[in-house]
Image 1 (cartoon, rainbow, N blue to C red):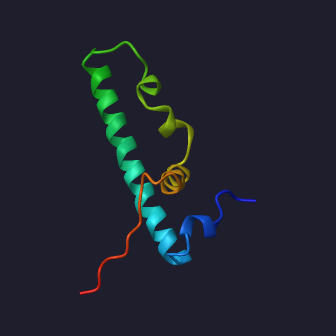
Image 2 (image 1 turned 30 degrees about the vertical axis):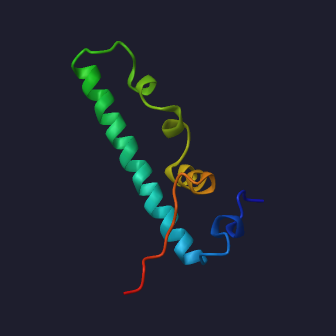
Length: 88
């Protein structure tokens, strides 16, 4: 069984399509955060500001899991919210 279920993620507010789009957008944000973090870490290494390795400078959350899994966890934890645009 997959945790969390689609029903738990949708919370009765969103359909599956909206859920997929929302998770994909959040996963893109996670990927952008990872790329920024990696670039900053590489710059520190190149400037000899640290003796740590590249993997030691990246947060464990990003290097141990896929972006989609992190996005789903953020959605469940409430760190990322999906909202419908207001109709004009």
